Image (cartoon, rainbow, N blue to C red; front, side, top):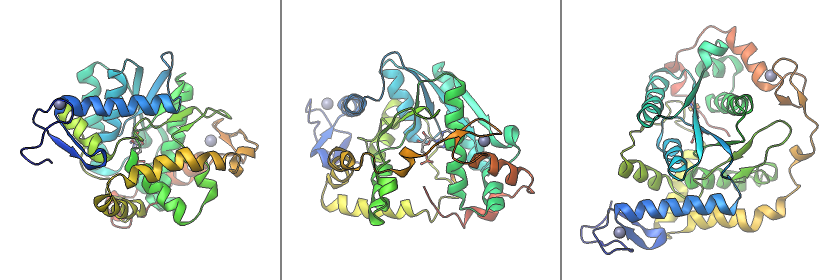
Length: 322
Ligand code: AMP
Ligand code: FES
Ligand code: ZN
Ligand code: ZN
């Protein structure tokens, strides 16, 4: 990770990580301090959380969501976790184990929803039944279940582990298409509205290399494997492109995303068509929707009557959308 003789920028002790975008190396202690500073800064700049908020962190068992849960607890927030079992074969079995162990070891509360047990289907079956790309049915399902768990549980804020690489890759895709509708909504905070909970992304100032290093330094065991259905996801290729640019011009990724949020996003306020949409309660589940039945209830109806599809059948076909 770092040349043997490198010294920490803060204490001049031996460094464990080099961060070219900060033009600095850090020892474990000061690396942790730098990450905490970035998260505190994001929370303050975008008014993400207050001391009285009841926080629900969506945790997948991967590095980002476990790191953000750890950081929020460390910063003194009251934060419970939410794990959604998506039924993606061994991948889901294993990821649930990481989330549960993290919660048990720290005495934290983890809520769980299981798609197969609670709704009678899983993501591979939903993808086949709806003829959507797996990541698309998966994203729709996660958004619905995160919102529902937050609202039903009386939580005031829902946190996800999206990091700088995730947000920059999505921004890159939206910019390639000049998709104003998505660009106007690509913010690190979405305020509560129309029955949706407030949603925040406290890791937008940290890269995935940094969240992985946070977990290693803090002794957090996380699932390293990527979702088997994500291969071919176009955001993975956008991440590669951005990493190539970052390697020759450190800091580009952060400028691309953070300057968008500071300089461009304010110009797009009010440009999202969804701001003016009239929403009413889904006639089946009550969730806010533009139609009479929400997309998730449509998916439940289509997928729960479909014969279960094993993940292996779809794993190689996974194409992304978000
Ligand atoms: P992804 O959509 O896989 O890029 O994940 C983005 C964020 O969604 C993660 O950082 C988590 O906060 C959350 N998340 C993803 N998968 C799950 C899951 N199975 N259960 C709960 N939260 C999840
Ligand atoms: Fe949703 Fe892979 S985690 S399709
Ligand atoms: Zn140091
Ligand atoms: Zn519904």
